[in-house]
Amino acid sequence: MQEREQVAVRQQRRWVPAVLAVVFTPLLVLAVSACSQDVSGTATTVVPVGATDFATIPPVITTAPGVSTTLPPGSVGFEQEYVVASGDSPIKVANSYGISVEELLMYNGWVSTSQFPYPTQTLKIPPTAKTTTAQAIANTTLPPQGPSSKGCGTRPAGTYEVAPGDSLSKIGSLFCVKMAAIMTANGWYTQDDVKLFAGQSIIIPAWVG
Image 1 (cartoon, rainbow, N blue to C red):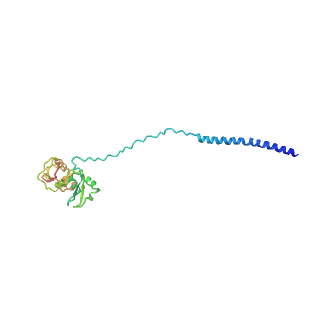
Image 2 (image 1 turned 120 degrees about the vertical axis):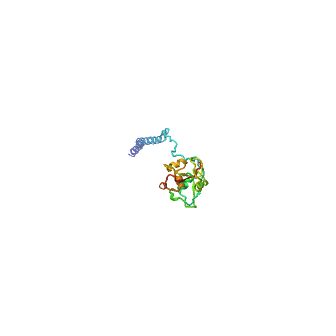
Image 3 (image 1 turned 135 degrees about the vertical axis):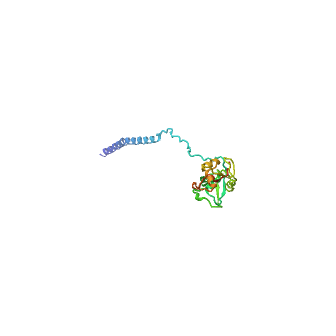
């Protein structure tokens, strides 16, 4: 009886490994297969990279107007200083230098004629001025030197006898001077101050041509 039991045990010991082999071998194969697929997939995956087609950005071209440094013909070409005198006004000083009131205000950083300085104070004259300070003072302080000659040549301040049909613009054209300059020379500050009549003697400001 003991011999039979020992034989049965030996037989069981023989088929147990076989059964285990049958059961676990497929599972082992599957596991190894899965691992090999993962490893090979991550190791051999190649992502194709083609040429990048970026649009070429053109250079920036500014459309802002360039700053011109060219001065108008007849300009003195340098900055000047002027000491304000009693009786001066923005239009009087501007006309003395052959510039506009707007130029005078802008160059001095003013936004209104009310900022015009008081007598003995100094202001700046832009390089676009047509006369020097010495000439400007002479043009406004020297008395008229007799009847003024017509035309656009250089001449001192003079007088003119108003003729019938004359107007401020017509007189300005005869002597190549601006109406504002004639108004300043005669103490007219607005158009309402201008009263012309035949036979009237008015001052024609000096001109440096």
